[in-house]
Length: 323
Image (cartoon, rainbow, N blue to C red; front, side, top):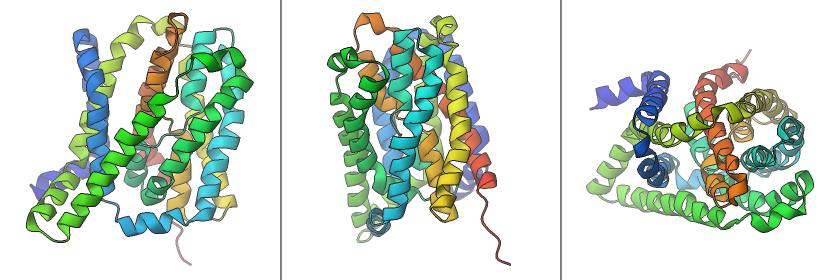
């Protein structure tokens, strides 16, 4: 078993790309699976985050929460710099309000779930991002209505229901984190607890593959049906991911963060909260039917980008060699 786990970790990038391809094939060949797989996204993502949280000692989370400089950089990047960039990019779809709202919903909200996984894979400070997750979630809940009011107008505020933010926070942060804490406690005292902890952490690569396949397969059919209308958003999402690499690097180095924390800033700035804001977009009136598909399109672009980032970011932010 250990040999299989080690093989999977060595070849994880290829395996993740294969999972995305499988998701595309399944979703296009069997569109009827889209709805049941969409219902499975939250449970599967919760399991992935549970396994991720297991690999972060809770003592590290406590220390990370006291890292004021890192938290300040993260907040500035996500809630000051990103909105300026998003406003500029969103002008290219400002003529279509449904696309505009979809783009704004997804790009203005920093990711608090699988960004932790990808950051860890790239050697970033995943425990810092885990500690920052509640702050980032609260920040976007408070600031998203303000950004929408500034970028679109006051008429949209009344039709956006922010309740899914609370649901996502409970199901994707609080519940997996509590379960991981209990498992760590059991692992320190019982053989069964240690076995469960080891098994969950060994399943990281399969769980990530399952998550990628489920997300892509559940959404690709809907995107395919409206692809001509959604094509305008794809260059915006690609441009956003590319722009956030130098933004994150410069922010980290300006604040004199170490390599691991700078990589975490890059990932946090580039990765968006698409799986959380999707229910917000789905709750919009029928006249905004393209908005949730614009959110889903960003998810598909981002998943591919994150697989690339896992290899690219360590090269852009290398470990400094001592003279």
